[in-house]
Length: 349
Image 1 (spheres, rainbow, N blue to C red):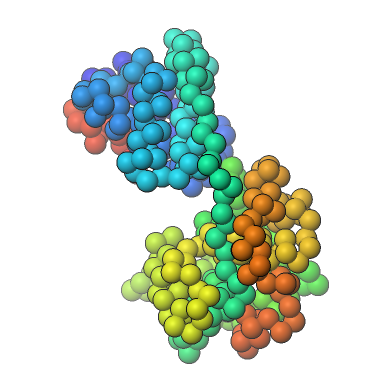
Image 2 (cartoon, rainbow, N blue to C red; image 1 turned 90 degrees about the vertical axis):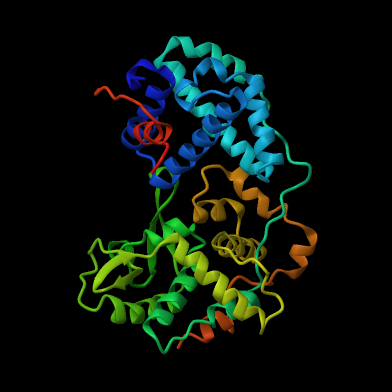
């Protein structure tokens, strides 16, 4: 099969390889989300229709198929309703793009509009930690080692910025601003850049961290703030490494603080910072800007947090005796197999 002879695969290729990265200028993490949704869908269609992957067409993407796919995500894959709806939004966005490129796809777009977004059975529960739990985790790295110094600094910034893990991993030296009002710039979803204030105490210890890891680097350098060195070669820290680190430090912290949850994951630090700010009286509009939310509705989940969670929340975001800080002293292709097809259109990699 020639790639250009298939409307579906040709448009998937253009969408993932040209439209999203070059015309929409979306981040690689956002594009990955779209790619994952489309990959899951075409694999589902292959199994359901019992056809070779390359034979999938837009005509097969009926509202019945999409509905069955979404139910499969929720019931078989164990996805939350939020994830289900996000996958559906990604698929719908692609089909809308395709319908603008090929009028024949308009019928498919019209058909899937019959599929409803599923409403959650109950209000979303926000998982976040008390300051005691966060402090216990931050206290676990062995700061007598360079790795421990790096890990603890990463944990502090992940909380203080309230940023997504990808945003913290992407911070460069040129994003740092020291002075009367220290700030760090982060690149968020859809390529939106925002500047987030950090505490003066955090800034001081960030400067100490840089004496160990960026002693001779100019502040306007494009070098990433956090990195790892292997055999003399510098590599950015990976998402996988951070999650492993949280598993390790979370397990150790749980032995000294019963408030540390069983599963500590990066986004929990973001939720914790947002909830602490909200409980300390910060307006939701400001919190929304702090977090880089595109819509205020997204931020309102913190206002609707579970009553028990509110009871357990700290009374202030960052009190003066905060233990967290006190302890910081167009070509044509011939498709012969499904893996190759996925690579060519951008569903793999």
